[in-house]
Length: 294
Image 1 (cartoon, rainbow, N blue to C red):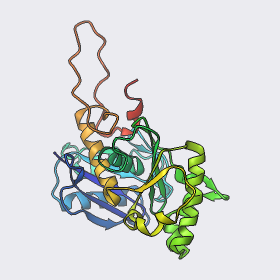
Image 2 (cartoon, helix red, strand yellow):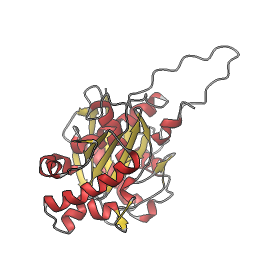
Image 3 (cartoon, rainbow, N blue to C red):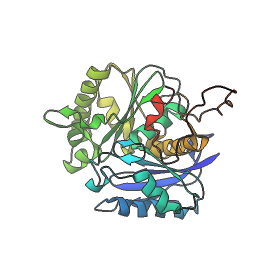
Image 4 (tube, one colour):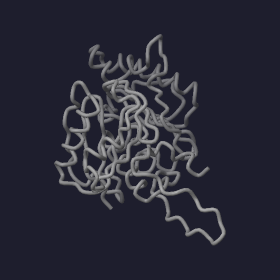
């Protein structure tokens, strides 16, 4: 089955159809630069450009670099502040298809999407302990899993490290802006990982984002961390794959299973029973999934 995924980042917006049986892109991804300023309307136009490039018709999953609840974006650390408290899921659905319903949008946090993909198809597959996915790019995104279940919107890139947001010191942008060597940057990343490890004691760190393609240049330089540290197997495509997973789950009308796969069809209610609440709206944020069972 193919579903479309779009990954909105601070520097680029990329997307492609995803083969959800293989957990990989079904076509070469298409990327455009994130507009500056990255206002909701300007970014929505770019998302439409990416989806239109493939002539896609059907559900679309979209990631956002910030907190997302019920289709509304609550923070905007690396995009325009007008995103705060914007009904972004509805905005994107309208921009992509108007009232036709041809391309309903499911919106979720970018690192959460990448984490879901890695837990189902990549480095976190089969892990049941605490796993933390960290995406290094314009900022630092995070996805925390315990028992295979997502703890949404953790935003660990904003933990304080030496008086600064960690992402201001240890993101890929910080490395580029300060012209840090791999050794210098790895030293900062090690301090950040040590801080996160002290707080959560994970069994595994999965390092994602574009820099994961160059993991051999910095991961061997990181010492003194008890948890296993591995690069994301889906590398910088994890967000696109996770976005498509979210759209598929929303289309099925419920939360995914613990590993991020689509829900099974719900049994028909028995006569006299209390029926379950209705299916989730296609613009509802999947960040509510961990609590859906209750």
